[in-house]
Length: 161
Length: 431
Figure 1 (cartoon, rainbow over the protein chains, first blue to last red):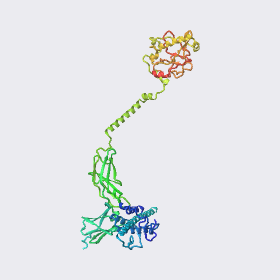
Figure 2 (figure 1 turned 90 degrees about the vertical axis):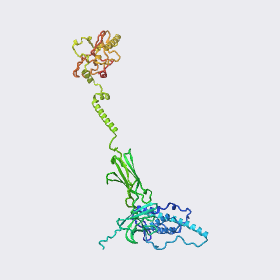
Figure 3 (figure 1 turned 60 degrees about the vertical axis):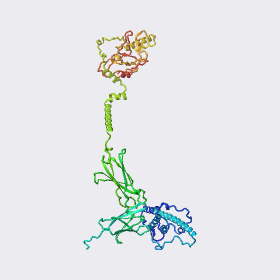
Figure 4 (figure 1 turned 30 degrees about the vertical axis):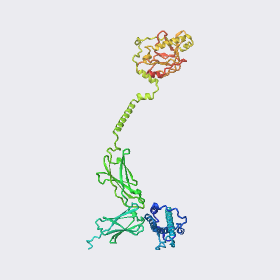
């Protein structure tokens, strides 16, 4: 099984068979509320900058999941349903629980989703808010998909070994 | 005083039930000592929770429970007993390892008469759950009024078949079901028993007893077959085999049988006095066959042949014809006169040739002078070895008086171109 290049960041219980991880990841990733799966299809095709900086490359899976899970926690502040918030918490915290990372950023304040916009008139603010919300939802959708894909990559590596 | 004071035992046990109400789970804890004073005691769980660090239990009589969606279901939690916010005792537990499934329900038993079995079915709420879906079910049944004599069967499906022959006939049975998690990730305890279902087995045990009508038919059939086999063995030689596999007539044996069956009116004596009532015609003499051959082309001989034929036929049909008495009709003549008499001498006749036939003593009658016995005229008890022709075998023919009725006792026919033969089948038929 490939381990993260960053020191001290790797999936816990690596010696446990794949079935354990299958069940756990299923419980984390597959139990998302049905009404939250399909987001707005108008998401921009441009990939957010976050994913340009961090990706699930070889030997960097655990590190990516660690960052993605922490990023996921930020979306709990969004105006979303309680069930969906619960699901995001499950994915985020479950991922962090399964990883054993000694993050450099431990203790630091998690970064915000975006920079504060300068004050503008009401109409422009409203439009910007809507746009921001839409962008955040698209970001969230892509983030959940990336986390699921990276976990499957780790599980395949466990199977091969 | 430490001797009189017993330390309270705050040991406790917990179990979890997942998705009992939608996405909500239930965690239940109780003290092992039921006599403990739990007035000021509280339970708290920390760790492996979503968005919070700890959660407090609710209390209902002597039970402490927590109904929440915030179980992470990964990793261990710490459950503590608190007395005035002071931890008295704590235990580390994994919520997914103390799962107690919900009890099965809707137990039904249906009897199938054609299959002689009972189909047991039941239902469980875990079929619709996402987490704990795979369970082991234990079906327990017993005959009522027999305490602690439970039969148990484990299965993963919700359907079971019980064979009728393994149950007592005309008896009341009680049956119930419980479940336990069956997966590598989820573990836990047996659920509560389902409500019992009661059913009665039919009176007759169909597997052990036969239908009386069928039994009677089977017995009768057996005896019928046995009787037929016995009769077949007894009658095989005399009745059955001759029909199925008729044996070829044996000249020797046939003649023996004829000799063994003297006819009623058969006179087997050589004493001339016993034939006083019979019309006996003397045989004038025997002429050589060579002389008789000369008369073959004589038209007079043809006329004579016709007359002789008629007489012979009339004689053959006479009441004193031995063949009639003996029941034998030799098929000697093939349509031609058996006698071809010399011209001018009706007494000199030539008999049509006969195929070689066996003499009574087993020897062939020779190629040129076969003997034909129309009637054995032998006494009873004559054996094969003692059989002798009643008249000495001589070449030539016996000339018959054309006037008198012909009652030949013995006809010695010389061979001729026309061969007449007595088929042994005629003996067989007349027998």
